[in-house]
Image 1: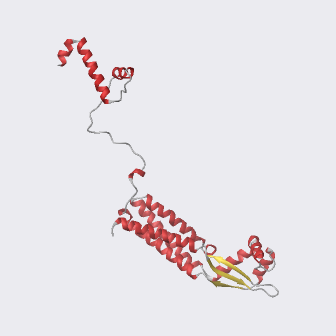
Image 2 (image 1 turned 180 degrees about the vertical axis):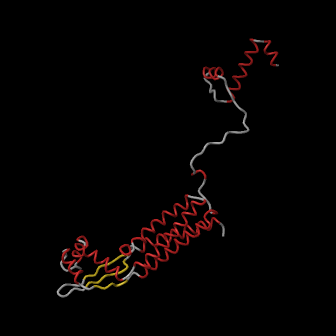
Length: 247
C-alpha cells in the first residue's frame, strides 16, 4: 500500500472513531430507578454516557485535534502526535470498560436528583414526589435504587471508536514519516537564495538622475543601457583621446 493511501486511511479511521465516540457518549446509557414508600411515586433518572465517562468525550475531542496535528506536522513530530493519538484511543476504551457500573450509575443519578436544578426539572416533568430539592434528596437518601443498563450499544460504539483512534495513532507513529506532508508554501518564509547566473547590473547616480529628468524609469534595464551608451558617446565627443584609448 502506498504512503498516500495509508495516510488517507489513517486520517479517515481516526476521524470516524472520534466522531463515533462523541456521538455515542451523548446518548442515554442507563436509568436509575428509586422506589420510595407509598404514597410517594417511583423516580426514574436517566444517565448519559457523558455523565458516566466524561473522560471518553474529552479524549474524543483531543483525538480530533491530534488528527489536525498529523496533517500539519512531519518527521518525528508527526510520530509523537501518533503516539498521543494511540494513548487517547486506549484511554477512551479503558474508561468505558472500567467506569460504567451499576454503582456508578446510582451515584451519578443520586447527584443529579440531589441538585436543585435537576429536582426542579424533574418536578416540572412530573417524575419527582414534590418538585422540591429537599423531597428529592430525602427520597434518594432513604430509598433503595437499582440501575437499569440500557446503553450497551452505545458503549460498544465508543469501544469501536476508541479502537479506530488507537489504530490511526499506531499507524502514524510507525509510518507517519513516509506519508505526504503539507506543501512548502505553508512553511514559514526563509531567506531567499542569492541569484546566480545573472550578470550584475549597476547604474551610477548620474545615469539614474538623467533618466529621472527625462521621464524614464531608471530600473528598466533597456533604458539604463541606452542611457549609459549615450553618456559614453558624449564622453567620446568631449575627449577624443580617451575614446581612442578605449577602442
